[in-house]
Amino acid sequence: MTIEELKESLLAAPKNGFTRITAEDRVEMEAYAKRYMAFMDAAKTEREATSWAVREAEKQGFKPFVPGMAANPGDKIYYNNRNKSVALAVIGTEPLSAGANICTAHVDSPRMDVKPNPLYEDAEIAYLKTHYYGGIKKYQWVTVPLAIHGVVCRKDGTTVEITIGEDDSEPILMVSDLLPHLAADQMQKTAGKVIAGEQLNVILGTEPIEGEGSDLVKLNVMKWLNDKYGIIEEDFLSAELSIVPAGRCREVGLDRSLISAYGHDDRVCGYAEMEAIFTIPTPRKTAVCLLADKEEIGSVGISGMQSQFFEHFMDNLCAAQGVRLYDCLANSFCLSADVTNAYDPNFPEVSDRRNNSQVNYGVSVFKYTGSRGKGGCSDASAEAMSYIRSTFDAAGVLWQIATLGKVDQGGGGTVAAYMANRNIVTVDAGVPVLSMHAPLELVSKLDCYQLLLACKAIYLA
Ligand code: MN
Ligand code: MN
Image (tube, rainbow, N blue to C red):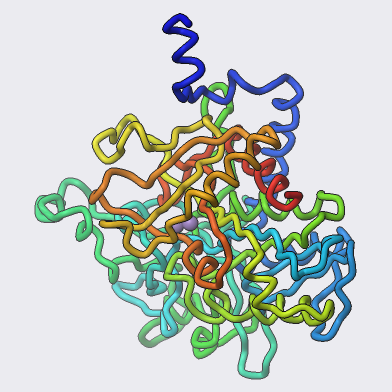
């Protein structure tokens, strides 16, 4: 054997995905990117992603979950968890005692939430006070176009949906920053303190209502909100309003190979899982897609992945087949799909180049995430990783090996640990992202499309 032959047979040789796809793959990839971008423009919060999923599921013949309902092969069922997370299932030909093939993702993203008593006026400018949600670099959220998305639930039980700042005819909102001319002190601060949490105050207006008295700008803004939405100041207490970047997804690069959007983390994985479950034929094992809320703050709460809404859903499906839930979970597999850090040549010092994912190399597969000594992660077994390799390879999925940055550089977690805690074999995989958690994040079309193929492979395994 020559050295070249020996290398080829023994050494791994990762390649750019563009050298490995066909002309037909490219057509499919571009079409998928368009569908994904349309979803992203319509879903900037977990509520919007959930309502999109429910709407689309109903179009695809999914029936709403009712405790005690039947679960026969080919049945399509969805469970809307209080409008903030959703489970979708296609019942397989094998009984649920054989386990389910599950794909999870989260549909919440870092942002600024409106405080419960947010509205005030200072120097005749009306503001909304916010409390950031998830891990953000606060300095990135000033002087960028912002929109409000969310709901207000009035005392009488009625709910009004609010979106301001997305249509070109609507105004946007903004947080101001200090001019460099007067930033001598600010520029001495560390990046975490350049903009303080209590400075993330969103400008709502500057025109006073006609008349005499104090807080006339605040009153004018409140009157505008009341005229348009029929709400009063106290209604902010029973509201979930989020401040997110305004604007639509765009193609990025002269070759249009990338997509910029707010909240690829992790709706890029959520969308792939949804489209996959909507398009697969009746699988052998029951396919389950879980889109969870609250991952960015620890997967906690009633709509997070630690919530027993998952057990409630699965237990009912199992009961319909006379199967014990724990037997089903023990035989299940879960792909925990979440984004990862794409290698960024502007910041080479944070990555172990040999173990970092790269844009256009396909789905990033993780044995573990976590921080420090793998803290807080679900460290998948060698057996589970072997299963993923063979399943992806058999389906022709382009994938790559990934870890989250250099040891001791930082780290992060996903919902994987919470699925593994349920006695489900779980592996992390997802789409590499540049500028993760920034107002606009970047992903490649190629990697997005490969995750769609990966989810289909898992559901149909
Ligand atoms: Mn994520
Ligand atoms: Mn995240």
